[in-house]
Length: 318
Image 1 (tube, rainbow, N blue to C red):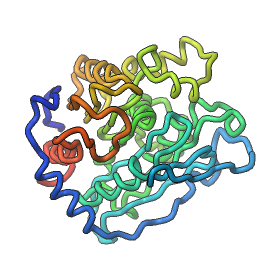
Image 2: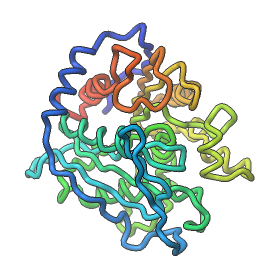
Image 3: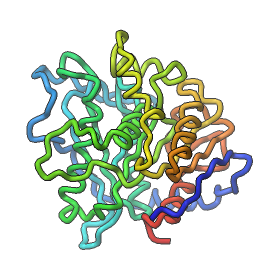
Image 4: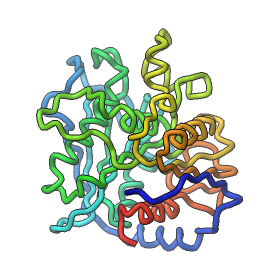
């Protein structure tokens, strides 16, 4: 079982990992791998309305983002094509449920995970859109459920340790990840194999957690619309959905985040603690929102902390 105690630390109380982090970055840049192409997530996409594909990838300050995703897909990054089975993390980039930040919250993350011995599945989940979906509010959750279903269904073929399969999300992608982590029993997909949709752990980086007033209004509006019900708010406020079987969590946020208030992570961490779920919360003093793999305003770097956490949780070898 997971051995990490309940923890909440801030940048001031943490140790300096900067030297180790730069060693990791050096290894990452030296690391070479064959990048696969995107593959369709479904044979037949559920909750789908046939429409023209308006998906468009654009570059903003050297970072790629994909707008108007209506055809869900995944890109699989395998550490090595050998017979060794390894952990796998499904990555959900952020973008406020309006686009996906597929570079600094996607491909860069997958390459880092590969460098520490973890397979990665980069999920291109659908953007909520009533023109493309019968029920736009469940489309991203459906895609996350399908991603973990595929990872476990193809575990032998893809070299995955089935019971070391986690979900990871940034910003609104963190909301997708946390929704999967707490609604794993509420299957939105058809899967005759009855494979568990519960992630073994969750990694949340500056996540949108709540759809209450302290959450992120843009993500809420894009996912459930301006005319929402009390039931929808409760269902998608993940701090209210935590239970004793919610997976262990690694959470990172900056105190000065003006886009997604740090209260999102704090209240989620509290809910996990209340339910006796192992949870680790690291708070940067500064960093704002959307810093991806490296917070330029801090000497501490969360990828080093994540590697340590995964080792202590016995997901990767020490």
